[in-house]
Length: 82
Image 1 (cartoon, rainbow, N blue to C red):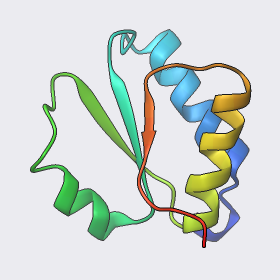
Image 2: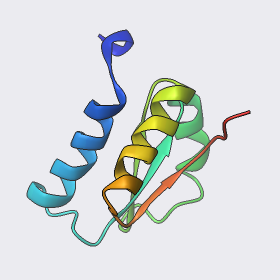
Image 3: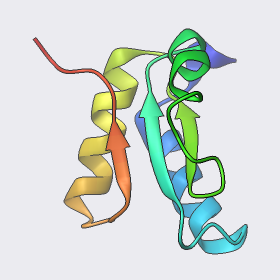
């Protein structure tokens, strides 16, 4: 199922979590994989930031691009395009 995850799915997940689950004051950190999640969780305030695993570098970058295009604030990303 993870291989079928698209950047739109990740962006929509973040939008829904902010709108419907009460995370309106949270920052979202989009990371490439579960290993990154395990590392970064030690550096965030869990009551103010939620980690979203994108399951690939391209998904992370493209999901951030989608949210940036929509002026969606409060999202950070890990990784860079080379």
